[in-house]
Amino acid sequence: MNIINQNKIVIFGAGKIGRSFIGQLFSRGDYEVVFIDVFKQIIEELNKRRNYNVIIRSDKEETINITNVRGVFAGNIQEVTNEVATSRLVAVCVGSQGLNGIFPLLANGLSQRYASDKSAALDIIIAENMHNADEFFRKELKKLLPADYPFEQLVGLVETSIGKMVPIMQKKDMEEDMLQVFAEPFNTLILDKKAFKNKIPSIEGLSPKENIKAWVDRKLYIHNLGHATAAYVGYVYKPTYIYLYEVLAVPHVFNIVKDTMHQSADILIAKYPEEFSKESLNDHINDLLMRFKNKALGDTIYRIGCDLKRKLGPEDRFAGIIKLALAYNLPFDKILYGLICGCHFRAKDENNQMLKSDIDFINRYYSDVDMVLSEISGFDHIRAKKVYAEAREIPLYK
Image 1 (spheres, one colour):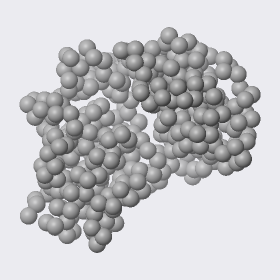
Image 2: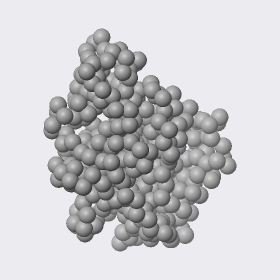
Image 3: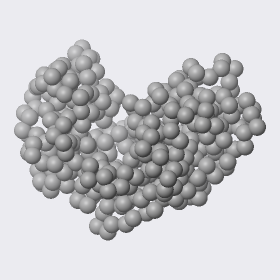
Image 4: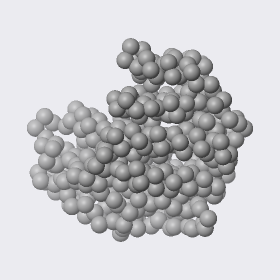
């Protein structure tokens, strides 16, 4: 019989968010943290050291040593299954590209857990920035579980809003210590209060919300939108810029970013009038802009802007909020300008490289904004003529 460890969390993904945010919160909350990852070297180092450092980058640098951690290689299927079957909680932060690989592992753990104890529910914290993440997880897991598995009674799919900013680790920093990770001071994990099947953990930094959909939208359509707008407008303004703080030091660019975020906030208020007020979203925008300008964090416009097919996609930060604007008959010209600048984004990493998917994007669409709007952003010519008409009226160097 499996014995559930009430002070253990299994985290799929020992990357930046896994280590700097989820792992940090639960380790400091006296949980044993077990990372599952496909990178053997990271897992081996975690098991060798059983701790790692999170370097908080701000006006004052702080080092937080995270203890009581270990790792399991994702290829060790039975070992991963055992960990899931005996854990109080599971968290997933592997990124969209890695999700398909974790569903069989989760299903195996759920099945073994059920075989041992028919009443042992498991809460899965979905630490991914994606719309309707709970529905996606439910659909994929149900495909792999027996038809008679009581899914709704035993699996809590806890959506989150991940607001912590973690920059790309430079090669020199990884060579110095492969486990260290840099992050901003922000340390609040917003999650779905209603989704838990078990008692919500009493962990500092957890912020359960009644209407998680509204808070996921706030993250996507204000934080992610503002971030990407800064990267895209900043690149168009001066392609040699590397860091986000450089971009936002230009008053013209800063004002465009701020105005775009406020335009999106007005649309969110129309959708969630009981959840958000103009004052609360103004405060949120001002706080975000201060965080975006954090020079010590060293966040790059490449990291913030890359992955164009996803970020300009039909339900993502630009197209998603524009479609809401159309539904509420509200203006979206500033948001559309950010999207168009994204079509011209060509920033590269420290090795002068671009993502393969971004190279494919550029080769396919180059500067054909109409094709991006239809094929990538999912605007229908008939239903969204206004989007195309406005796009053609916007000069790139606004």
